Length: 110
Image 1 (cartoon, rainbow, N blue to C red):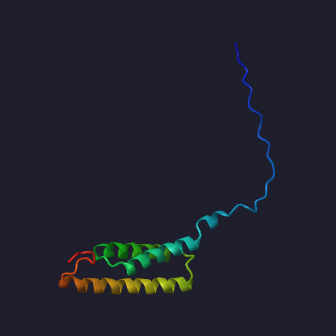
Image 2: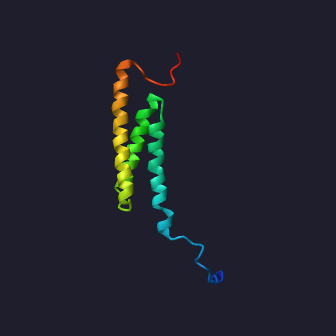
Image 3: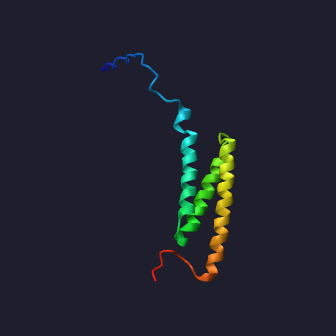
């Protein structure tokens, strides 16, 4: 015997306003990316623990380079990123000069 299956009725389409919807491009805005590299940079230049400094500098450099490869970065932002990379390079040079003095970490208790 054949059983007859009743399908659910088709959904009714209604009109809705698209004013509350964001374009897909806005979901990955350049402000989010800009904030990220700046946050990593800020964390690196403010780090006082030498054991964390190399990690923070590397993270900042990586995030700046990732943003620099984005074609949406403005000329002004590219200048800021170049300045930030220069500052990170100087910070690494200063850090290397501190090693012979035996200063390994600012958190070492005396």
